[in-house]
Image (cartoon, rainbow over all chains, first blue to last red; front, side):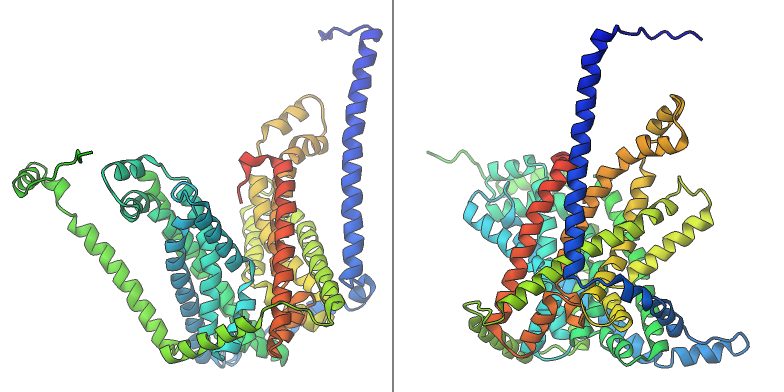
Length: 294
Length: 287
């Protein structure tokens, strides 16, 4: 097949090529500079982070060895006996696991209720007063920037050991993160119902109740469930600082090298998290379906 | 100004209710269902309070103590340990940066392996997904504890922990990004004479890179928060000092450390959101 592309004379082609080359060169320079910045950051971080690849390589066998040694010894012909020996403390762990789920539940509920009442104050479309809005936003930001474990450490000193500090720490963090998500949902609502309610004489609280809440309720519930799922994970480590739940037994097992206990508790946690993942996903899909039908 | 609003008399109300029975009656089924849901949630909460051994007395005395601590936190003061804390801040940054980067490097191949359109074999795909789920099911702090027992105390354990946890999460996100790819640019490159490798380089990479980069930056932000706490189990960074100072009740140092943390997270959020906007444009932020 003959070429149907007209070939331009050289004197027209040369400046176009020159411009193309310079554009490519500019891009390359850009990429190189980025790569250099990232490289410098890596070197600096390796120095700061005490990364010693040789030491790591010399002891690299420890990691697979560790996972190998936490595996339980299970034999086919004594399978059930081995299984019951592996999960020798199942009753106690199950009780702690249920405690963990309740810590997550209470943290999500308390934080969610707080976020529900605060989020309307942080929205640009509902609150005209910038002082209230900015204060609410900064407060929510503070609540979610300080990690829950720091709150938990603090509360353990103030309230004593046990699930109470764990619940409060989770509630504060949930308040911060759900408050932000809720506020974003509220900022994206259709404002016409609000105008309608205000025009027919509703107070601010009434217009929120009858014009905003029906629009956002299913989204709020969906975010709340997502947060519950995250909180179950977080509640499982609250015990590391003495704030209740199964983390207490896990950290003890890891620190004291009770190898088979480590794998037993970890598997319990992973299974619980997966089951709760699946359940909340089902409910969330139904909620999203409700949202689409509306 | 007179009010232009008129009230419905009871007769009008009755007439309207008769004309529009469904509109005027509160729907009992919905109300009952809503009430039941709320009652169930409250009952469950009450049971949980009882089971976890909450008491108002403990809450009250704890709150009083907490208020006392908060008063003692002002003004924040590092004492003589400022250089130590700045070093810890550097460690925290290093943990977040190298952890995210390491996790991403590990996650990149797994992102392709877990994508349906790259590996059509359902078993391989299922196995890789479940593997990533398992890695994700274990919290960063548990990984940190395990790595502390493997490589010893110090920030290196923190880096490995953050990298492992990010690997599980980024692997899933990457595979979703790869699955959402548009095949047409690749076909276009191949149809104009490019090799399959060039198809990946010029057809696929330009599509995935911006998405991956923005997710990476987002994870860097979130990891900068997480890396402050891995120190609580001895894996380096600010958390180590924070846990220590809380235990010895040095409240001014505690508040100084928290302040450092807030400033660091704020600065990183600012820089990385700027970078994200530069990479993918403001309209397409989806995190």
